[in-house]
Structure formats: C-alpha cells, structure tokens
Length: 252
Image 1 (cartoon, rainbow, N blue to C red):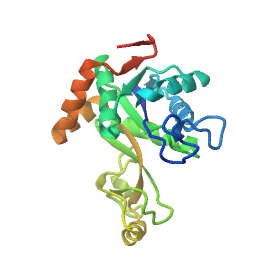
Image 2: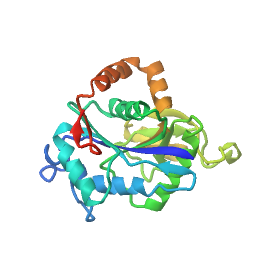
Image 3: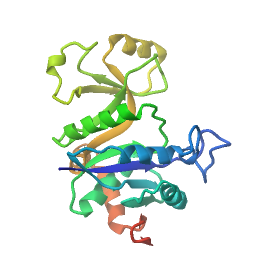
Image 4: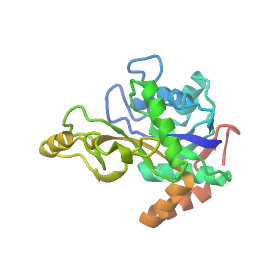
C-alpha cells in the first residue's frame, strides 16, 4: 500500500484579480465559476485520488499566518479535516513551502509520496487529472520526481516549458510502464519565437507546477543541489513556531 500525502500550497498576496482579490482575501479563496473556491476545488480534487493501491492521508496545507482562519473555514464547508496547516510568517515561494511539508511528514516517521499542487489552479477535466496523478504516484513510489505537463495549445510566452525526450510520439517503446516521459530540460517563459519553435518540435509541455515525489527524495535532492534552502527551512521547522495543527487546534 503506497502512502500518499496531498500538499496544497496556499500562498498568494492578492495582487492578481484585484479588486476581487485582496491581500486579506487572495484569488484562491474566490468562487470564480462554481460554488466552491479554487482552494476548495483543489482540496476536493486531491480527495478523489483513490485507488486500492493507495492510502490517501488528509491534506497538508501550507499558507500564510493571515489566512489560517480562511483555510480552516473553507475546509470545514466541504467537510475536509486537514492533516495539518503549516503557517509561514513570510512566504518564500515553492521550494521552502514544499520542504516544510516534507519535514512534517518525516517528523511523523513517514515517507509518503507527496502530491503537491497550488491552491489557485482551474482544472476542467478532473478525470484526466486523477489518472495523471495516479500514474505519477506509481512512478514517484519508485524514487522518481514527477511533474505534470500540459500539451501546449498555442505558443504561450507566459508559461514555463518542460522539454521531454521524445518528439511527436516517436520511440514510444522506450516509455516506462506508466507512460511517463523522461525530462531533459526546463525553460522559463520564452519569447514568441522560441515558443513557436517548442510547439513545432512536439516534445515540449507547459509546466503545470504540480509535483509528485517522496518526501525523502525531495529532501535529499535539496541537500545535494541547494542545501542553503534546506538548512534554513529545517531551522525554522525545528522551532515549530508557525505550525498550527487543526487536529489539536493549538499552536505548537
């Protein structure tokens, strides 16, 4: 049985979609199309990743101190009790937030597969998302770091790109049994000329910013590649001055 821990990165300063989105009520807490907010939709999507092969834990939420009550209330509305809400006094983007979630799992003597998503994504096809995440979990359980990519529909310059090994569906015999593609390179937001080139080559995907990996794999990779982030985050985690566990409803 593969242990799976959903992680929702719920940062955001409210600068986008202003004036609907504000610092005290950023866009992930807005209901844009449905009756649930983007954050609630993300929580429900992850709750649906079920399989006889998986043990799915309640989600871990990483958010800012100023949004802790919003997170708690919106989860209560959809009957989801989080494993933990980890509060950041200052947002430091994805790597430290993911590290906090990994350290939280390790503290509980677990090494689950972390399914890490942001709280403000709008995903239309939930069935395809579920299948892709389930596929990624199987790969990650073997020690891989998995990213979800989106097949480009136009030469977008506002997204990052992932370059994979295969082009236009060729050499599919080399795919893993789960159908995952080896990643060769990452590209930040390109100019229009390069975006058009990526689209023609056929082996580029938009980077969805969704990661699937074991907690231990992430911590080891960070130790090898950017130990400064790991050391600083580990020191902060050791103090546990910002962690609010909803199960005990007390600060630790």
